[in-house]
Length: 67
Image (cartoon, rainbow, N blue to C red; front, side, top):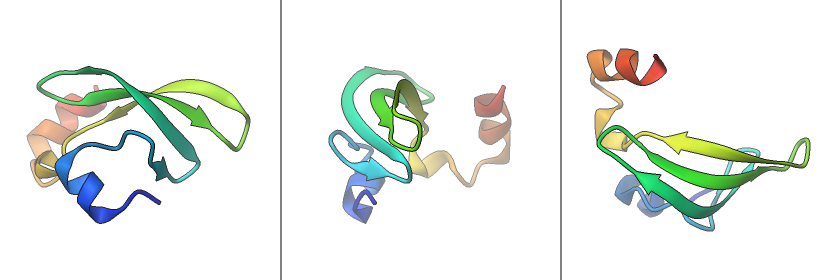
């Protein structure tokens, strides 16, 4: 699992998050950071979109993110 410090600061490069091994950062915008990752449970490469921790307590942001 990614350490707390990495999650707090938003840099998850080369960390593990659940079933995902996170690789390089592909892009970063106002709503999220996108990483190239490997879904180890089925062995496929995916793009993983991670929103910043400081938005997790904002219900309106969560709704926009999910859309």
